[in-house]
Length: 93
Image (cartoon, rainbow, N blue to C red; front, side, top):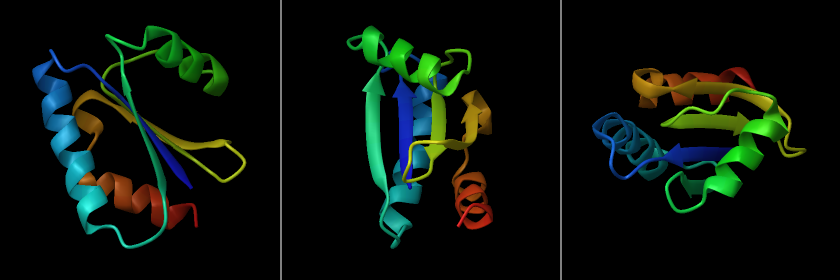
């Protein structure tokens, strides 16, 4: 599985979401790829991710994909919570 996290370092909501993602990554023992996309410095990659998965760009935004890069789940803004990430992964194993 892979997590894509689109982050704005200037946004307080992104800061809170990043703390949730970091907490999950610190606790997680299962193998998972992780990509942090800075939406300010890498707008092209941010747009590519939105287009690839057919979803509207948001920031912060977290996308869970399978090993074939099919989107399984996504959340944005204050819906990015450690417990929701854990639940999404468990439901898609």
